[in-house]
Image (cartoon, rainbow, N blue to C red; front, side, top):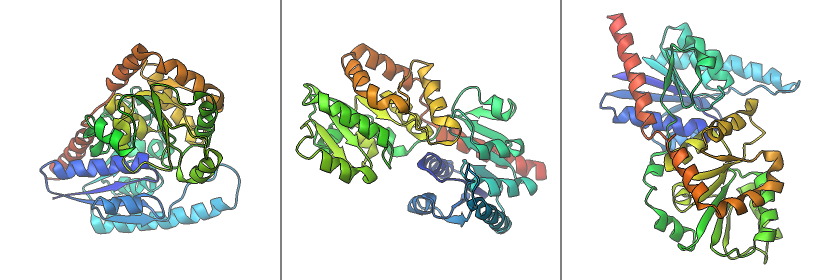
Length: 372
């Protein structure tokens, strides 16, 4: 039986691909035992058990970019996390460790390297994260979703696999009618899906308020607007009695797959997971990269699509002023929508999870052969 640790998390962009890889390993036909290691208090501690996998938590946290006493506690937690990672690896005795990025990936990856346990990394973004860059010299393989990642990891270990996405999204490709019905939309109208991620995005919400003031009940167009729970009460109060009948305002989307299914256009942040989903579904997209991420990686993700004619990008600082104008132009241009849809779909990889699972199992097989 192959024993595999999958470490990392912190955001959906790390957690959902990690679960998809675990599911692919289970489907592989080989006997596998999988243990997740995440960061205490982060979403993986809830999402991973919901998916049916055990998980251990580390007290690891990220450094603050400014000088602050909190970084003293970061170092204390890092020390505790290294001790805990050594204990977990010693007891579980994995054949392979898979790091998907995020704080918890660091201690487990370091321990694996010191013990001679093969390490496989999965990098979701077009600009490699700090943890994966630090661990790369210890990795046997690095699975990537963008071209040109050799500049971070070296040519010998990089494998282009794409990013795994949630399986239910693939089932939504032909579910437009169900999505329209769920959200109370009109099947005869073009649908714009606005989403700033699960927490919402203040700049996108303000841009939408500005657009709605001029949009009115625009004939032939409707909007499904997921604003985030934090923003919903304030928006609902300000727009009471002013929200056009062709706009559905929601704090969050329970069925993201069905929201995508009924969308002709999507306005979204440029996280790696979101982009992978949009590529797979072939959605014409306006990307608004978040400026509040490490090393501006969302902007780099978006530019990788823009360079291939696969998306439109609006800088966050300009979105309030430009979103309404850009959408007004795009909604009148079916040829542009079709071209963007075709170009982004060409970048989608439906079996990324299986590709990564095969690499992980092959690394385990080679290690076993070397030991015989």
